[in-house]
Amino acid sequence: MTPEEVREKHNPIFEIEMETPCRQMWFVGSNERDVMAILYRDEQGWILRYRFRHYAEPISDHWDDHDTVESSAWNGQDTKMVFDIRPKAGAESTEEELTKLALGFTVSMEKLAEIMRQTYDPGASLWTKRVSTGKDVMEQLKAAPWAYSRIEKAE
Image (cartoon, rainbow, N blue to C red; front, side, top):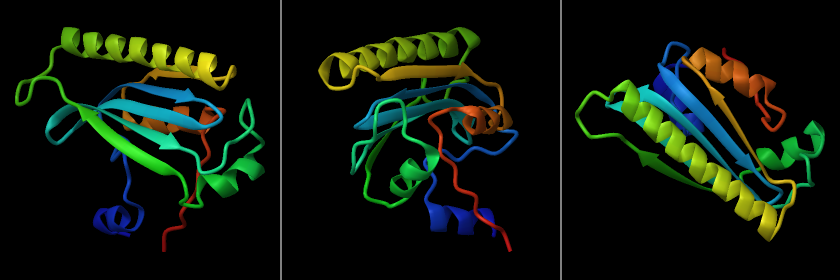
């Protein structure tokens, strides 16, 4: 499949290649919804893209076993909302600006996890990792206990 065919078929939220410069990734999870975010560089510059996902069916605390959750992870009944944050449009972001953005977003995600714990899921948690490339992102996702992957066979 060409990249265009992949985009059309799968409508990816994060378009990251193995060599894409990346900075940090986050995941806040609970039994009703989760938030995933990645700070990376695209053709327009640095972007912090995050998506909220509300589960169609609540999952158990501490992430049910893979077989149970996988069927609902790909059934298309969850609702998702995607948002972007871009540092100063058109300007090259400095290391200091990227650090400030990443730290600020981490604080926000910590607060979100705390609200989830207090409101409806005592097991809600934040996971964050520093990454440098799309390859790092893929390796972290493969190892993350909350990530469920689907492999598409190429012709």
